[in-house]
Image (cartoon, rainbow, N blue to C red; front, side):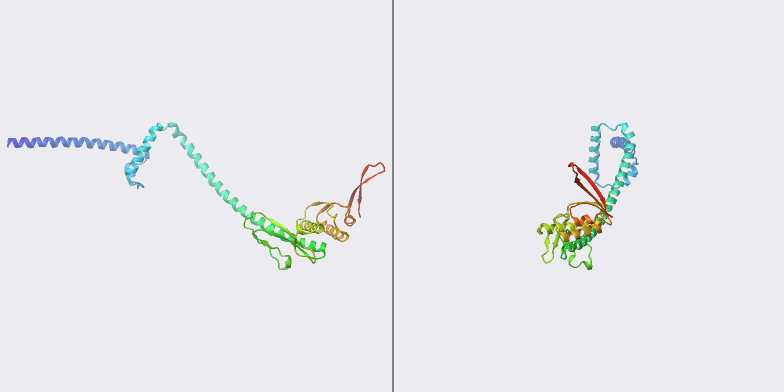
Length: 292
């Protein structure tokens, strides 16, 4: 019985030693746990209990590897400079300011894009309207010069110009050109008893009359404050000179004309005449005359 008691006492002592070792290890773990909780609170600003409630997007093993990696990089950097903590609020404030500025610029850009599109549409509508009016007036003056026939402007572009039931055979045609992104306007003229031609196919006299008709149409629609014409009537005969002088007189109601000419019909329509002559001493002399 004595031997049995000694054996049991020995086993008890061994279990007691093991229990003491477990308690010591438990104390170490608890101490390490408290240290980790304190580090978590200092690093993340939340308690370990609240940290457990945050769901993990990745497995714990991967997060542990990333933590080890970041700690290694932090050691290479050499820790955090205290001055950085002081600069951070300023940088954060600057970042928020620039972010707001970027948002404002983005909104402004979107607004400008919208305004640009609206302006482009208005410009397109105004251009189409003006082109249509000039083409109509061009045909009118062309018929006056040639005593008939027709003339028109053809716009080559994907666009739709205003239509008019009274345009008859002078309706503007649109030809699509998918590969072109610019405006191209062609001038077509059809003198009486001739086929419709591009202006490049007309004779010299016909081209001159057609050009005068187009210039007169542009002036009639846009009405500039003044126009200078330098012997544009040199190739005109008597009848066409009279028609041209008549058009000038009509256009002069809205626009002031300075015309260099030797044509008597045009001279008769002027209000003021300026000329140069040579006196007996072969000296050039400027003379002027006001016509009543």
